Length: 235
View 1 (cartoon, one colour):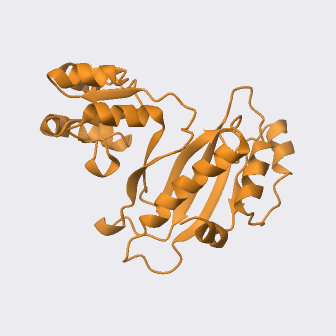
View 2 (cartoon, rainbow, N blue to C red):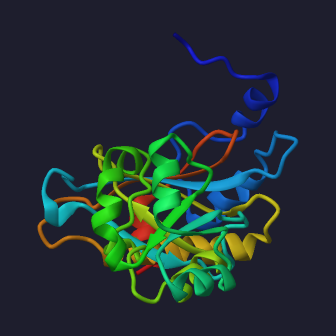
């Protein structure tokens, strides 16, 4: 069934030249012109990488500190115990505790964007695998969400640290700011994100690593960048 597009969307979609691969600055500038929603839309990056996530060494995941943050307030659940509960809350966690929150999640509660845990909690969190795993919320050391220094982790993610991971199709989607950010700030965030993606290229990845690079607003059309240009300018 064809997806219905509104009149405003169709109007701004005309700004994007079909089949054209834009350079970084040009694409981001164009994306800011495709605003149609009444709310402040998020600038999102969509990548398709030349990796096969079925192989463990090609499961790209990691974190990056965006120099200007995402513009979004991230709701954090810290699963920990003892004095770490107070430390996590003082660092900005929205919720902190152990069994009470694990039980709530098992009952369907998911009012958070990110879960950070101390290593000693992982055996207990393991039983939440089916729930958190399907939502991409399972804590993992590679994404910086399993750490003994939970206060520092909470603080970093509140300031704009971004966790990302490749899906089973070899794609990564991530927010890099808001449409009302200054263009220079969006560009700096984009380059910081892409720099990290390029650094994580697995040695076993053959052929073209950056297959497609596109940016869009929450409700807007995608603008494709030239992967060759992105790979040269960033990295």
